Image 1 (cartoon, rainbow, N blue to C red):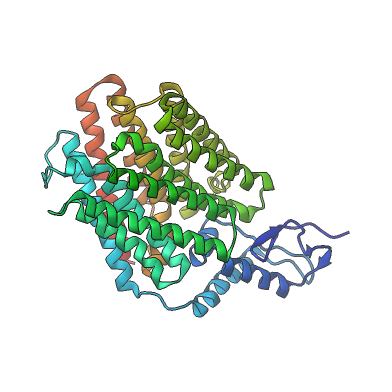
Image 2: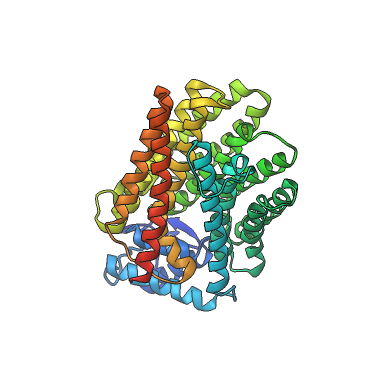
Length: 443
């Protein structure tokens, strides 16, 4: 009888047969070759390799001429990533990527400035437009540019970089003397290219994770298109939130797949992604029913993350894997808060409920994921190591405390507490950026 070890990925999919595939024994060399194919065909390629290695996922384990140890699997993973990199088509050099990162960074700074103005606090810039552009700068300008850049790197085609470039330039154009329609049109162009990037990634490897992330990109594209039609941001927030939520859970699904979850895991998450998109659309037609459905679907996504995300295992580890898992756990908890408000509160277009939902998703969930993945993804983007240091936990704790204070201010209608929480959140995000740059420079 064949011994059953850990799953071996074959042709981009995992086979739960240990050292066997389709009833045929495979050698260590064949298993490693299969793993190389899985890494090469993965929609995220080198990013997938780096994430799976850091989060202590070991997809190879066969039993024939001796087991492949965890260290050997790790070396195989790193070697296969290097081999794939050697075959990779030419891409813009690091200077081009840094320029796009700088664009995202400027959007972040402008978005934080707008956040201070909305809190009624002093801010370096006081342009009149900033008050209305906080959400666009943070979700599309900052996070949208980062997501599009990561996808362009995964695609390994020069045309893919049009997505982050157009999104960044369009977002910055919103603060120029040009009509707002110009900036939103450029954002729409960039997000449309991002959808095409996902289409190309799907043709390379038809994975459920890519399909889920593509649904998120379609939601963002639809939101910007409706901005051009003068639809108010609060009405579009479920669409913008879907962009962040589905992009992140799609990436987590790809990592979870290395641990060979049951097929229902991927299928179920895809059903939830489609249900989220349908619920977001329904909020425009039937606000009450659509928002309640949106809350229920969001909470179901939280349940999926708790059940299948690899972070629930890596919480018991040390160093960077635990740091990543801690931030993911906080992010999942804040997503549950947003889902609960939608489910119990119904439509929220202003006031305390709206503030809680927006910042539970945009800060508690999305920025916690940025903190978690920055030490992993940033080196793959700029080709420069970002050493892990426990000081990064200061940003994690600061962000969570700031958001708790802000939400407490919302609940108690305490303006001072709300302002302190908001200002502390801005300071924490800036401090994390400084820590990141310092660790890179002092590596």
